Amino acid sequence: MDFSIDPESRRRLEEARAWGREAMRPAGIEADRMGAPLPVDHAYFKRFVERGGGRTRWAGPDGKAERGPRASVVTTLLLSEELAYWDRGITVADPGPGLPEASVLGLGTEEQKERFLGPFLDLDRPRWACFAMTEPGAGSDAAAIQTQARRDGDGWILNGAKCFIGGASRADWILVQATVDPTKGRGGQRSFFVEQGTPGLGDFKIEKKMGLKAYESTSFRLEDCRVPAENLLGGEPRHEQKAGFKRAMATFNAGRPVIAANAVGIGRAALDEALAFAREHELLGRDRIRDRLEAMTRKLRMARLLCLRAGQLADAERPNVVEASTSKAMAATVGMEAATLGMELIGLVGVRGDHLIEKLYRDVKAMDIVEGTGQIQRMIVARSLVQLPR
Ligand SMILES: Cc1cc2nc3c(=O)[nH]c(=O)nc-3n(C[C@H](O)[C@H](O)[C@H](O)COP(=O)(O)OP(=O)(O)OC[C@H]3O[C@@H](n4cnc5c(N)ncnc54)[C@H](O)[C@@H]3O)c2cc1C
Image 1 (cartoon, rainbow, N blue to C red):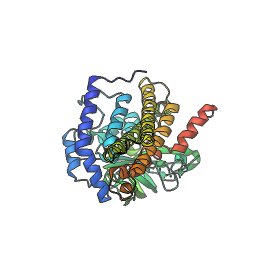
Image 2 (image 1 turned 30 degrees about the vertical axis):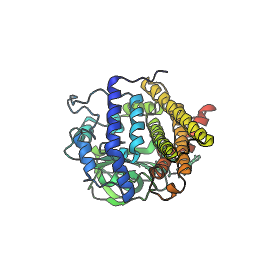
Image 3 (image 1 turned 90 degrees about the horizontal axis):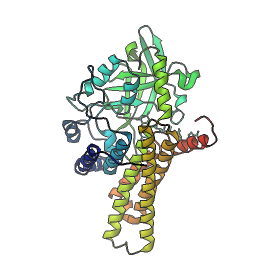
Image 4 (image 1 turned 90 degrees about the vertical axis):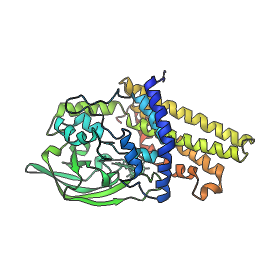
């Protein structure tokens, strides 16, 4: 397996490292100490946008927008690890079309790309978009969502409640997953663009989180919220394209390895901090401590290799679902173990709550929850062992 990267990817990685050290980590610590997401007018976001961040991958209506070469999945994973090393909460807080962009690129009509991704071509200000699937009664079991979409003349009426949605109150638009027929499970679901300010969209409440405080995770309600027919992602049935996109999504998974890489990045940061603490407090002379640090280094390297393998298969457009789930299940566990080791080493210093390791300890847990919990990943792998549908 060759995981070497080209000089341009290496340059991007070095740039990410410098930006992470200089801007991301301080911003993440600031949010953590405030116990609240960075405000939309924070200088960090302005700088992020000024240096070219937050742009869409869409090439524009004439296909000519300057975007540079698209990074391979392997490069994306290395970048994701590096950015999470500096601050994973900030990577999610960063402006941009975020999670729903891939769905809009894969399924959106040309008119939808222009309307919803167009403002992200050249940012005049920090802008966000977000994807809303989770509901108070539907997390792992996405087929159970209850938000209803009802056809009404030339539009749709949405009713329901969503929770833990990243960036919902600051997003220009939210891609809302709703059901047109709850008896059909996933088959009855559709995605709708709901623009901020649409009557009936409201009751935003920022959730209290143990970690990753830099970005908002928000609950909201949709009450007789009317959107035009053109806001149905992909428009009226275009079954072939949708089936093709869904098939691709079921075969390659690039999302889980990204979260796995995030977990490796957080774990690596915790290990570096633990090592620095042990050095500073002259603990490295003890075999037991050295052994634990060595074991952790080994496990983090193993987790990184699993992520990269999943990414390499995705780059080669080969099925990677088992590798993606394995990397996510493994890396989240290893990341949590690294942060736990750090907490044990620093002892009471960690309990006081003002050491970076303590923040990483609170941040890393979410890597075991988002994009499918550890249990769900292990279930996917186990089912594939006995050739059951995933
Ligand atoms: C920080 C953070 C950010 C998030 N951001 C977003 C976002 O932007 N958009 C969005 O839509 N959602 C978001 N979520 C929600 C996330 O996707 C859900 O939390 C996740 O899907 C798990 O759902 P749940 O919390 O309802 O747990 P549940 O599904 O209720 O699960 C509870 C427990 O039961 C286990 N479990 C469930 N089913 C099974 C099973 N069949 N077999 C074995 N064990 C099972 C789970 O592993 C878990 O341990 C976010 C969550 C967090 C923590």
